[in-house]
Amino acid sequence: MIPAPNNQDSHKEIHRWRRTFPGTRNQIRRARHFTAGYLTGQHEADTAQLIVSELATNAIRHTHSGAAGGHFHLTLYMGSQLLLLAVTDEGGPLTPRIQHTGTDQPNGRGLHLVAELTTRWGVYGDHHGHTVWALLPLAPPNPAAA
Image (cartoon, rainbow, N blue to C red; front, side, top):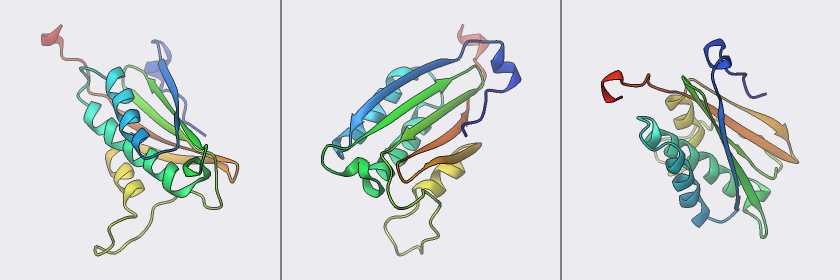
């Protein structure tokens, strides 16, 4: 389950943006640009783009989303203190999990990186489709910039 917004966000507006992308490698860049477009001016925009890139890459590499005609969904929820990033794939035989890879292996660190960059992350779903989500804390607005 995706966690509910915290109590402070429950009294403020939560913004949601969602888009479906074809399950091809060039769409990973488009998913990053989609994310950047909604986070203009946020200190966490670069980190959010990196997380989206990792989650979208996993969806394309390890699920049916990367098969011919496949797709993945990206959803962003932004409150005053948290950004939730979620990628939903078309499922597959494996559940997304952190891989324990050696330093000589070029792949397998995506979810480890997501875990290091976020407050929490998780997976729900089954072989028909998974949603991998991550919570990224947002820096308080700078009153001097207002």
